[in-house]
Length: 545
Image 1: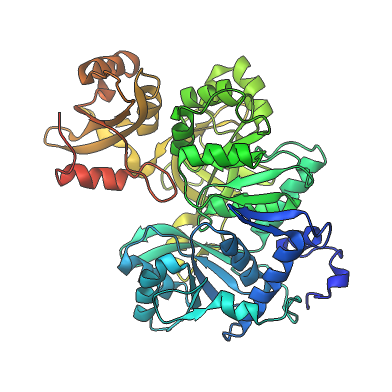
Image 2: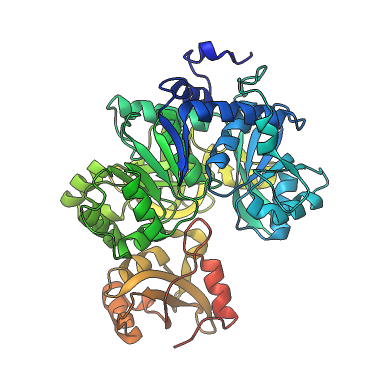
């Protein structure tokens, strides 16, 4: 079956999300489609550039089914080249910036990428990874760079701006997008997704426009007025889905090159942003900025918060500042949509049941959530803590080229998320920790849930962010240690903090040490980097009270 490529038939029934994007880009061609600072592309310009990039990729010998590694910064051309890879039937392999040289090379190798497209800023690292691969992928850059490679934008400038033809429709079990999700050194885990993931996104958008039950992400969008800001990395699931949700609705997508709270607030105000997505540390940084005041962003209708556990007290603070526009979304690279809490529901239900501020919502459409005990596929009763397990259309096909770890993660049709939580009687999901972040301590080796402790710490005066770690302890195996990012000028007493924790959560949660810092280290996507925090403490790089 061949995808019809005639521009005159662009309004035919779409079969991929790219077709859906192009439906909008064939209409009202002078409307803005993509924005980054002074760079502003209309729909017509974006469509023609997309087609030219598709031809440019084909000129590198790429054929449907080939993998293309994308080692990209946040910029308009990064959005377009991602669409172009899918447009010509190739597999997107996202190469995020956090892996070291060895891990990045292993990622390129395991993904079997036939080409790597790099931002000029990352060219040296991309060239090193490509050189280590036995598959010898072609190295391409989005503009001139210091390494010898083909400038894809220059090639595209010489290519036709009509849609490439003869592209087969993706198969039901064909991996079209691969996301890096950690792993061990030299053996990365790559979550592979089929086109079904994008079908779910389109269905959610259509459901919102038809006033069907909310998915908890973006509300019904009006292409004439809605403008979406992508501030998380485009090569992570959060940034990718934010951009896709905007584009399939025909909304203008504004790209933030690098997150900084002041810059984010300025762009949101000047570009009249109506919807965006933040990971929790980004939200906290915006809330702590002196220019973040009620009424400063009148166009804003939705902020989706996801990617990590969010403090209930910070969520309530955000509602006080921005109004009832906060939605929660829960997912991971292996299942990019699991549960959600719509802004309207969070505001109304949270007032009725305050404990719901700790929930990440209920399962999205066509998704099931159960809580399983270790090494079991039997569902645990309501409110009993266990591993969160999921099945549905957003769950990955498996780990790419890794059947052993796929079998470990997918059991009996259920994805084992590695998150620990429970469900209440109404189906609301509560996360208490990542399995690997549970601190086992005390004379009876009980569980300390770092999420519970961190949520409480964020309610204390002067505390802007918090992280709890288990550190080696001769008596109990592990002891609780906390790291607090404190507000400038705040007088935070570690003994007072410890006493407050004991009074609220009990002796088991009492921290052995409390370390005060100006800020906590974060990953490239903005999450608290507990690995870096632990390493810095172990190596003596952090001051000790």
